[in-house]
Image (cartoon, rainbow, N blue to C red):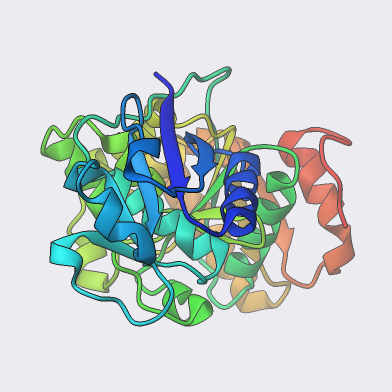
Length: 320
């Protein structure tokens, strides 16, 4: 089912440019149009799922638009607007999209179903060797893949550093998406879309924060999360940056199509890597070893093309 969003603003140039931007944004689930409201009678609400209304027109619009479908765009400090949803009119476009999707997830009638063309391919980065550049490498792989394919990156470490990178607090994370499914909500796809952040063109699902919270999630819940991401989205690749704070390491790695293990060439790191592989074989997870690509942290960054060739096939991407 197609969903529709209307921008209501006297500034036609602003409204038209915003509509053009939102319509061009890959994965944005609304078809957007704009109108310059001069008279209350100009506004038709039939068939429209969400309205972005400039604060100067709020008085006229509120009489016709249901509260749950109305978002007020404020130019400065937010007013109360009788508990109406608000967002900053001149904030960064990425933050505006996030806010719109967050608000959309609260509307029961909006369920953003997707049509999947092929199975989700899961690539998990995990290493028993710490401080080996795993997070930087997994993010870079995700950024490169996202240039040509729908790619989602998920950090599964207790402390991902994402809030510091964004320079602001994250309101919701993967745990909220998991809860939407566990509680039987019908708009889980919309909930997920409202949680995802975007950095350098890569969609990022914020991790559950804190060691205790991460450790409390069962392996069955993690596997359910991966299945729900496949069912609810049209991403082609899911990149997982996996830490040690999760239950069921072997079972989780078994869910991956490919595993990338980063290590260093120093003797201690190589011993840790050997012990890790022996543990997998001892517990019956030899198949994980067979689908693992080993990558040394000392490898020059420009040779990442070799890793991508092994992961998805030769010349299936562009390295800039």
